[in-house]
Image (cartoon, rainbow, N blue to C red; front, side, top):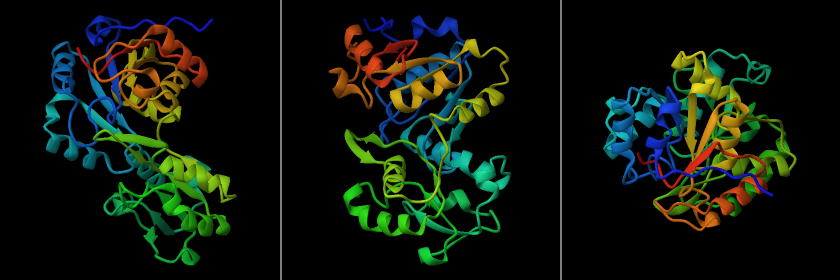
Length: 294
């Protein structure tokens, strides 16, 4: 029988258990365009309670770009402590490689992604982007070139790239996100397809890699990880990543799994259904809430 997972109406019931929170962005705090109805008030409540907050996002761009986007949405910079994006994690590895995969990359890069997200490489000699894959030594994958592009649209390009067997850096392991209520293709699905087509080796930077949680824990400066919880909407990235890092995980049910769980924003999911999906996904959250609310 699937394990029973406690559900709560909001984070207030859980806040005293933890000294700090690591928050997902898309699907938890905002939908890519607008903050969710309770998000700003919940961030303010966490701040009033003295709980440091790090935003950990699989956004394939610089952390400062993510901060600026949140400010433009109306999320005040004073309401959280730091942002760590998967794009920033890629940049950190390119700048000072600890992973042999990155140390072995050449200096010519073929870029897959939206205009602007290539800023991950800005000011990082010796890397330079090339338009011809024949001149590239590796591929930077930040996602589709527009929100409308599909995997089918990209299939011919991915096939041609896979034939070259180039190393690929995936700067966003998400397969899909919800943007303004619509499912949008992400870099992770493209990297999956590249592997399926027999392409070169792939490095995934971002959730669910426990290394990005370790970076967050270092920044928080808290020795006891049992006093830290991560809040996210994806079993595959947030819950799996937090679990792998040895920290508690809180699932927001109205995000990417909302349809699967039969709930909309603010609806408390049926515990049996949450347990069923968790069993199917092979990872169990510590608790769940209907949304990022206090």
